Amino acid sequence: MSFWQKVGDFLNPSSSSQTIRTNDQNVTGPQKDPMSDFSQILDVKNIVVDVDVKSRDELLKYLSNLAQTNDKSIDAEAIYGKYLVRENDAATDLGDGIAVPHAQDKSVASLTMLIVKLKQPIIWDKNNSVQTVISLLIPDPEKNYQHVPYLSTVARLLLKKGFLHSLARAKTSDEIKKIFG
Image (cartoon, rainbow, N blue to C red; front, side):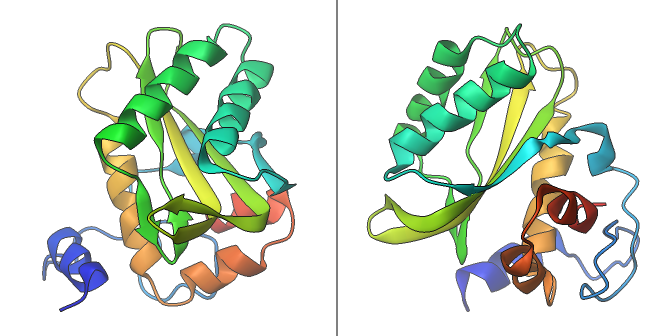
């Protein structure tokens, strides 16, 4: 059984009460997940395509600076440090060219999602390459672990037929925003 099958079995119990909200016509099945409405945490200004970086750490620095550029209250150095600590604890590379780094810091006022598509894939961890990064910035303290349903929904989306293909062929920030609903 593959890693993704195990994740799929864990995240998709036989009950069909949880479904995924997306505007992507290539993702089949029910299209609404009231738990994880990405419009609440994903703004098109936080989606960047054709980013040119050479390493995981350079990308994490880029994400930290992007977050601060779009929200001046965010401490980019603190976020960068938290990303590095998280990656040293356990790499966030999910396979299939996707990584989901996340950081929790007191400078983050509200849960925020960042998405970056790279110009060229980079090595993330142990020769695994990554081309798309989906990141969550989490307030500290966080009320009721609100980021967990979003992480779960991202994982479920990655398992949906056609989703990775749609994400890979998206060329603009607006196209990516539309895929996430």
